[in-house]
Amino acid sequence: MKKKTILFSSRKSLHLSKEIAHFYGDKLGNINFLEFSDGEYEPDFEQSVRGTSVFLIGSTLPPADNLMELLFMCDAAKRAYAKKITLVIPYFGWGRQDRKENKRTPIGAKLVSNLMTVSGATKIITMDLHANQIQGFFEIPVENLDASTLFIEYIKQLELDCLTIASPDIGGAKRARNYASILNAEVVICYKERKQANNIDFMNIIGNVKNKNVIIVDDLIDTANTISIASNLIKKKGAKSIRAIATHPILSGSAYEKIETSSLEELVVTNTIKLDNKKNLKKITILNCAKIFAQVMRNFN
Image 1 (cartoon, rainbow, N blue to C red):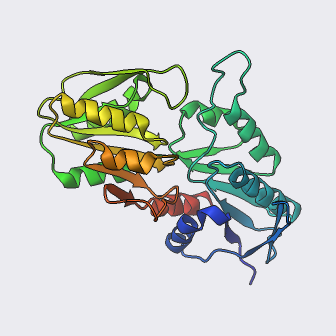
Image 2 (image 1 turned 90 degrees about the vertical axis):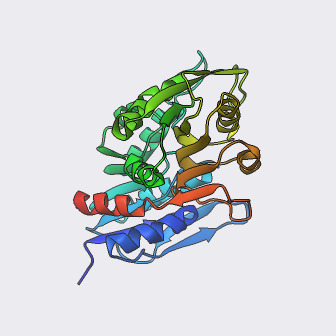
């Protein structure tokens, strides 16, 4: 009997896709990638997808090949007459370009949403979008999953007294308040100023952290510049301990080294992006988000 649902993975997201397939109760379908000497590639499903509901799993973090690979897979499924095509995007890359920062800059997240829709996607499942407004860029349903259930359960197990939740910037204040209300904790905000991306000119802490166990919450961690500066500043102001949680561990450049030398006791992330096992991971705890995706995928069918 022909399968009604088939799961496929992009090459860079196999670590999580296999976990999702396990909790979903199925195996990943096979894809053959024809590769040309100049770096061009072409995906080819090794089984029929005609009339089926297809889940294509892949985070779209830079480089752009990760996005293009998912788009090519989607177009291939459309042209092979799949009935439904759901893109499962654990980390929605390019999401920080959700508005025009200057007069002559693009809205990258909107362009990416258009590409996904044109390629044939009928639904999107993702987790902790950098900005909720990105859902409005799509003309198809978007399920934006919340990783806070994983983090809150983990934080409760720590049994920390004098708990304080910190936002790394003004924009994350709402997220911090949501965590604080559930955990019955106080909130502080790291006020920062920067003239260009990944380069902080000034930071100060709004609120009291003395003798507190502080947890910094964010949706992603890229260069770890903000987290390391914030943790060192919070430590100077008398905090008992500092931890950070971030859904998407991009960790580019010297991020691993910055985490290791910072005042952070622990960084807690999910596996939406695979970490570099060659780096020092002593301070990093990884929570598995695969079960959440699998549950939602079952509900979508």
